[in-house]
Image: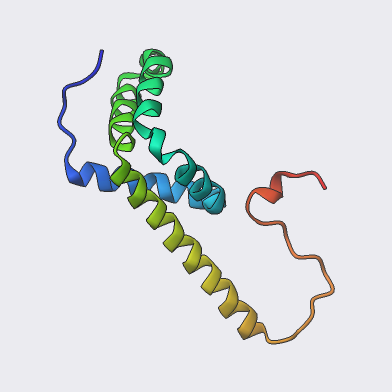
Length: 127
């Protein structure tokens, strides 16, 4: 059921970058950092719980998903990898904030009469 495949540091870095990129794409940087910081002490227990509850159903989706799910649980059981993910998310968030500040400076003090488009997770709200 569980693979005995060794996970290389390159695999760890790739999985961490993919997770950070997905979280950043959905605009959930700050929420994810808060969640990860809060539950970092329980990372090992969470990984074991995920293996117990989720992993048995991954084979239905396919073998490739099942193998990457096992890697995911193994990588994020380690607190150091969670800290790497948090650091990467904070860096991406700071870059986004600096880009927005640069845009505001470039635009100057021009006021827009039209409403700004919804960004991040707010775009899913109907109001």
